[in-house]
Image 1: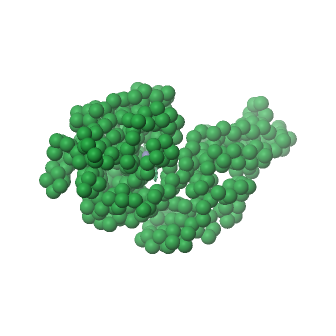
Image 2: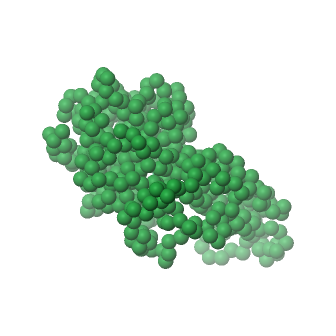
Image 3: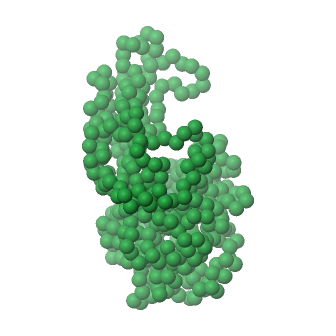
Length: 453
Ligand code: BES
Ligand code: ZN
């Protein structure tokens, strides 16, 4: 192992160069005009795996293609399915980036680009670690399959049917995903819970055209007023969501789970000052870490109506719309919540307007099985790769594939976060801390060693 780690360490610059090349491809899955670029990013990672000795191919779906690659010559040894995504979020607002979002730039120890941490950097760390072992030894101690998709950031709409159709080929003993983060700089973590998601769009229609706000104001319902009244009523003063039934299936945290949260070395003041907010905020009765990791939330993600250009325009808008996300926790079911919330929104629409609610995407909440030798092996690997014992954390983000892997293939997932909480995922100046990239590469090699012995 020590020779392998030395080789991986010696290849440091090459690891960075490969990542930079991949990050140059603007694989924005939401953007129809980037379809070709998304495919190119899939072809790129397929090429990487193929030249490293994997059987690799790009499979078509109804949407963006899936890269599948395997090396299965370790007869009798376990099989690990490594999942990642090569698509990225849109880079806007562009003016806030210090460099082009797709012109990867190194500042100190950070590599800055859209996708640096989410997820190209993290998934490439696993790829480089595994391929480094294969190159060095000429074989792997376990069987490895890669499933790297191009639609995670749009809710993985075609992945469940892909997994069903290829369930034989995808058979594995456990899955590993690096698409989340460490607890803090110097405190690596293994994620043991993810939130689920329901994403809705609400559209309120008022008059059939924009109107003069003096001539018509007060006589015709303003859909922006109506929509903000509706949205404002969805949470009470205590930060609790007011939708009837919303909390019915929320599993209470056990006293031990609350102790786990309390024992983490969380610096709330640093969290607050980093965000420049006068106070932290959230549902009464819970700590910041509990709110972030284990309580359901409802947030406006986008709000659109009326005149938003420069200066004043006295106008009563014809319509108003909002995009809402609800992050869910065990045992909330996204399908149940989706219906509950849509019905509630419709019931709140005043008779002077009409309302439409549409559903974008969803994901199920995840709780990782804590008593597993895979999790133990991962903790040892992180300890060796990062030189520190990992803590176990619960994250607020969602990764739709995890519940599909459990339901369709029957396997658990190990969530090995290599990023940092301030990596600016989905924000301007997204970054990946290069020493963590290297540690992630070495952790992947240690993990293979750990589960093969
Ligand atoms: N990498 C994130 C998921 C994540 C974020 C895990 C933070 C842990 C902490 C992933 O790429 C992502 O952003 N997922 C989407 C899923 C959605 C589009 C269905 C999310 O959480 O918004
Ligand atoms: Zn991601």
